[in-house]
Amino acid sequence: MIEKRKKQKKQEFKGFFLRVPTDIKLQLDSESKRQGISQAVLAVNLIDSGLNNNRVIPTNSGVSSWLTRHKG
Image (cartoon, rainbow, N blue to C red):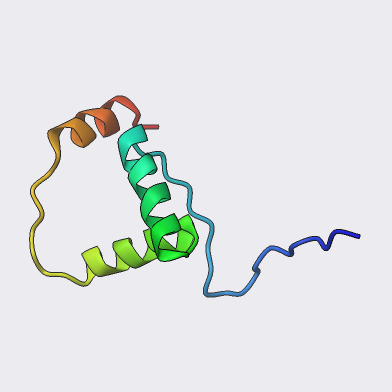
């Protein structure tokens, strides 16, 4: 019998949905496999690292234009 996975309902976790360009998604998939971790864990680590870093990262114009076209 297959065990059903339960959703994490702890207060410290909130759902988050993010659409990204295909090339970034492929990089995320590749790197998560290389590190042996899930894409979600890798994405959270990268976001946390970026938010805790005081450096300003230049905006990728391709990503900016994609985000502008897909604002909801």
